[in-house]
Image (cartoon, rainbow, N blue to C red; front, side):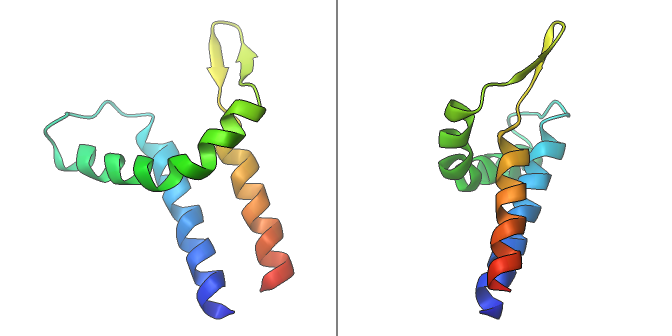
Length: 83
C-alpha cells in the first residue's frame, strides 16, 4: 500500500509542477520545455476527461481551468481511503 500512496503523492507533485510551469513562457528548445512536455504526457490522460466534464471558470476575460483542482482533491480522497 505504501507504494500506491507514494505514487499518488508523486502524481500530485507532477500536477502541481504542471500548474506552476503553465505560468511561465518556455523556450521550445530549452530543458524546461522537455520537462513540461513530459508532465503534459503523464498528466493529460487524467486531466483531459475531467477538463471536458468540468467547464473552465470564467472571470472577466480570463478562464481558470479547474480540472487540476478536481484531480488533486480526488487524489487526496483516494489517499485518505487507501493510506
